[in-house]
Image 1: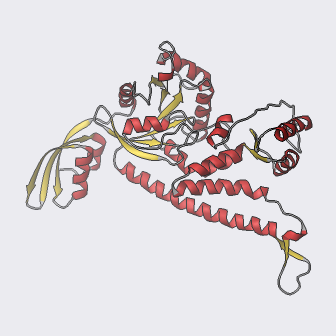
Image 2 (image 1 turned 90 degrees about the horizontal axis):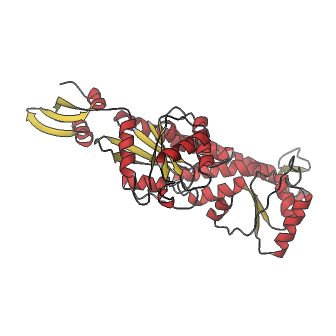
Length: 397
């Protein structure tokens, strides 16, 4: 929670924990704790109090009245971070949808002065209230945003179908937020994706090509980081982003090996992958940030067993320890990806194509190695070395 607050731009001044058998209906925490917080707020420079728990609209109003400062809950804090990070149209739509779903039940009116007279014959007294109008407008906007997102998802599905038409496997980088996924993604693909120490620096999935040591080409996808107790509204809004993980041939589960909570983070990601239907997809456990560990603590096998035992994950999952920042261990990761991915051997092919079939010629040059080209009248004979899966899709000689 403190890390989330700092990512949102806040300075953490004080922390408080309360253990109760059941939450207080009016204020979540007990009366004594509320008085303690009120005294701390009045005595210091505290502008906002953040609860690591969802607050009902009534609880939020009661707390703000008693504490005389702004009060937000975990969901609102995460929504603020997501709103600041969203860059693409899809990301902004996803955040807006989550914000509207969060706001709708929290609208509050201010009595009779918030109502208006209804027009027309037979109308008596206050008509539709301002509160009802606001709720209706939000509902209309939610429907429009959902329709826009459906269009974005349809476009993403079309891009995936086009990618699947070409025999390229997809690797999805998944993991807890701030585990170093974007830094690893940039190291693997030589890209310039934003890599920031703040949580949720990456919201929109990015896909880039990657060439393995065997000269096979694959696609790597960087995705949004997972987090404990991610609000349901955000899980629903970012469904299109998570689809990139479920469609992958291999998941690179990136873990911050230097974090004291590495076991808990690993367990949470394993749980989320199971929830979205990606538990059966082959995984490689990438133990990142080993440059922060001592020589004895960076042994990949002991780290692997500790993380997998604590997370309840499959023990056949292979692991590699590396530092995405320095590049140490990247070669081992690429070799492991090559061995774990389904084999697609390179074969020799002789093809006779129409001289105007530029699309097939482009495929051969992009995903294979053209050895010779001979033009005869209105046809062309091409000798090439190509992946076997691509050869099956090409016309027979």
